[in-house]
Image 1 (spheres, helix red, strand yellow):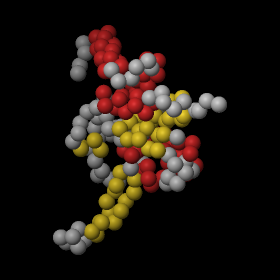
Image 2 (image 1 turned 60 degrees about the vertical axis):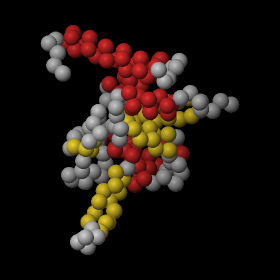
Image 3 (image 1 turned 90 degrees about the vertical axis):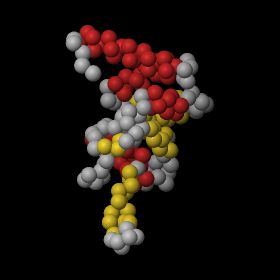
Image 4 (image 1 turned 90 degrees about the horizontal axis):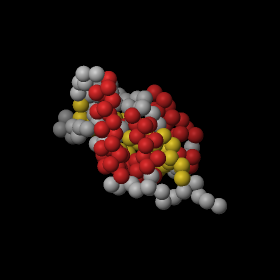
Length: 176
């Protein structure tokens, strides 16, 4: 969409922001400040860290934002036994039963989503944390084989695109 002036573009952004906030507000109640900062992190192509006690709808917020914006959403529950290939993906050897030929196929991990929710990241080994940080820092999917197809935001069909992901890390802090 082309705008005739910067002021017109700013007005359009303001209207879109208000519509997005209203739609999220239908699901998330009483978290206006948090919603504002999550949307700012998305608009600025950044990352956010949501910290709070259990039950504050942190996961629901991120999931709702991805639904409202029609973005691909994946949640990673970090555990002590999680390996880097569990989040990045891996190549597997497959065989074509018709021809008997073998080939490598890349199975994408959850880091290939537009919005990735990294839950309880402090519970996982350092090498897995490093894989998540590396993919976030590069603004690209790690280990993406040549010719791989990603899904663009707002599109359910696959096509070659360059789409960076937003990582929302959640840490629950229990009260003592």
